[in-house]
Length: 117
Image 1: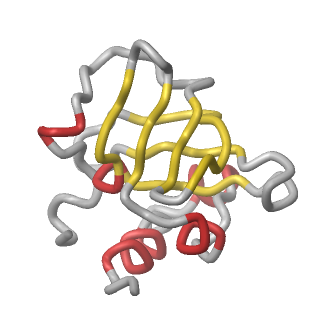
Image 2 (image 1 turned 30 degrees about the vertical axis):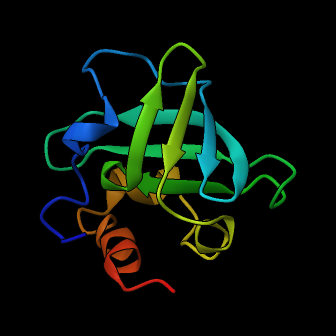
Image 3 (image 1 turned 135 degrees about the vertical axis):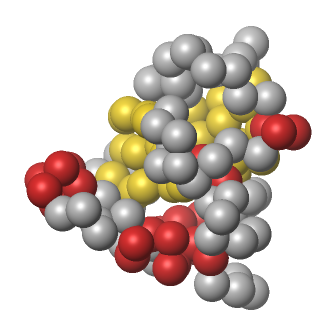
């Protein structure tokens, strides 16, 4: 996955603009990680913010849209191409920094673009 497409939904993911994904369950490659708390469809900066609940003590994680491999509207689930461990180790989403720092998303691009084992 390149830096160019990390912030855009992959064509095969089945994303349809305008669908409210808030509340959808999120499935990593090895199990459930939480529910979508917010999402963005901004061109070049699309992402999901997932509330992990008790799984990692209420941490909110940001997943770039390029990590989404499938959106199942009928089951209200979003499947991503990362493991639970990879998501657990991701930088935590901070809403205050997101709004105030123009380069805030760069840390997520760097993390999600690195090779994962």
